[in-house]
Length: 102
Image 1 (spheres, one colour):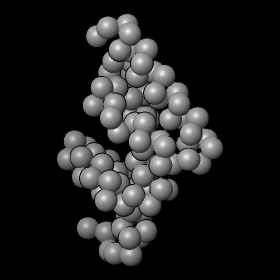
Image 2 (image 1 turned 135 degrees about the vertical axis):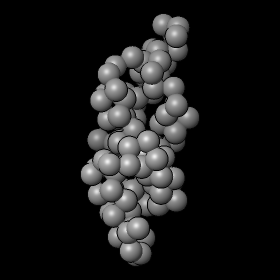
Image 3 (image 1 turned 120 degrees about the horizontal axis):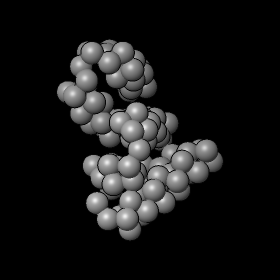
């Protein structure tokens, strides 16, 4: 991991968090999707990196991008099938889409 790569990922995360605070959820998705598999480059704990991924998921839900939210949830549930958070968000996603949670 280079220092420059870590800095760039950190800057993107900061911009995405600022956009989320301004309710510009589409921007959050555009900023975080390209770096979501490179979060370890900015360091931080597993919990901190998961907070970024949760922000991406929440932004996709709030932006109405339910296909992306479903994709992200499927990935999360595959890795952590026992997570109440993941299943709660799956239920919320299904409710927004007007279908029954699986």
